Length: 116
Image 1 (tube, one colour):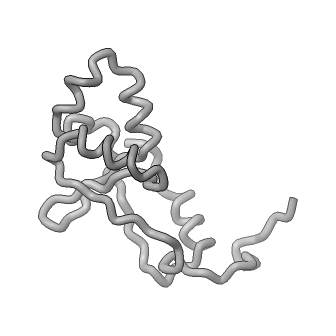
Image 2: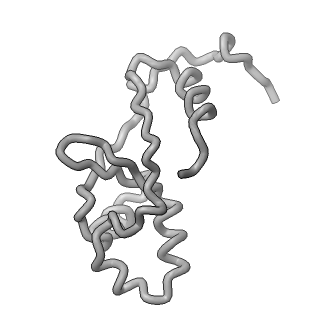
């Protein structure tokens, strides 16, 4: 296994070069819509929650399906707006400029605060 120091990272690719996803919803969007979209697009890592052009947070696919797997009444939850899952929504979003190299973005992600 090769270990690279941050200054020696072999790929000089910026995060703007990576494939991105633009799936976003408002806080009032029914959970059923989010689940359907995530099921139809397995490559989506999660959903961003945006209101009036401002990023409020996001929920990862893993956390959402994990929660739904623990619910006894999934059907009643699907009819609720996504903001009902406030405890799953990460609110410490830190947008990074597209010119950041991947290694810089990784270092930034590792320094971010833990779960809310």
